[in-house]
Image (cartoon, rainbow, N blue to C red):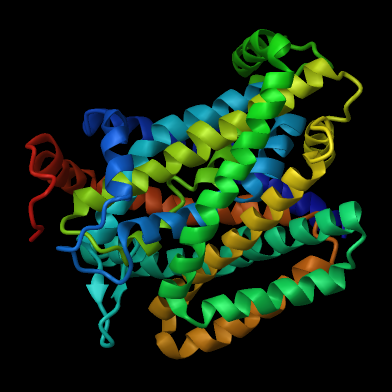
Length: 450
């Protein structure tokens, strides 16, 4: 097991070395520039996300698609993931995570656009789309589309299933002494009851769960920042300096390299907002929208909420708490998060518990849909029922077993998914620019698509 762990760490380090960082951030920046900074339309994107587009074709509302996407992204990556980045990469990782989110808005926009542009209607009248169809129909690279779906179907069991179930089980066991076996059974049954209704059932549950859990968690973060307000100046300074200086330390931290800060910050940023990963456009393809750019904008707002807001708040909470309380153990992500929230009198553990449980459960729901659509592309709808059975069983396994290796495996699978998706985004950037100029910059955002 130790040898296997070492191999996983080496593979993860290789995949998340400078080549991946350059490819990922390079794509974010490249798309931002050629699309003329679509980030400046974020308010329009937020408005569209809560506006029903009755003229558009699709299976769920734009908000339903966004809620499902956010359900899959606002998970343990926002809480434990950010804490892990801080523990391994130092406070500078917070800034790299945030930068990934800001520039990643353009990438998430582009993914949403291609999802609508190349989606298809199945025999039963439902929509299906995502990077696999952009690769197949836009670039004629069927083999790469198949690889993407294989990586997605496998990666879903890590990033979207066992990691989340394990986080729920550990938290409830450590905080409330609930047996992981009981947690595994309850979460498995709850998931089964939702996913049998398909994307409409998932979108309905997520549309209710996401706003509640996000508001609940954000209010908790704001309270901690209010308590730690005297340290916010030092916190921001330490985060910025540590992101670019290997000598930066203090406030209970030891020095870390710029490469470590960038690697873990970007990796956790992608794990959190999934911009460039290729997962979110799978559900974006099911949205009711009249043209590709409207859904592209709605999709981009997900990265804004997920990373620019929620992850940033988490990072500030964690670093300010360490500065305010140098005795906090910041070498382990889970312990660091728990220690920070325990500073909220009476309800700190409750806020963290509700946040992690609801975040993780919603992530399980969102990723179940991603995995199903990848499997459907590979072998048709007949395989979905078998995938769902495996999915539910994996939740139980994730809850009861020690999964210390899963984060490394999840990072590796993320990278393997991202590569073909980023290739599609770069090679189809001309299509993205053409559609953006036609609908967004020419004031035709309400026009019907072709």
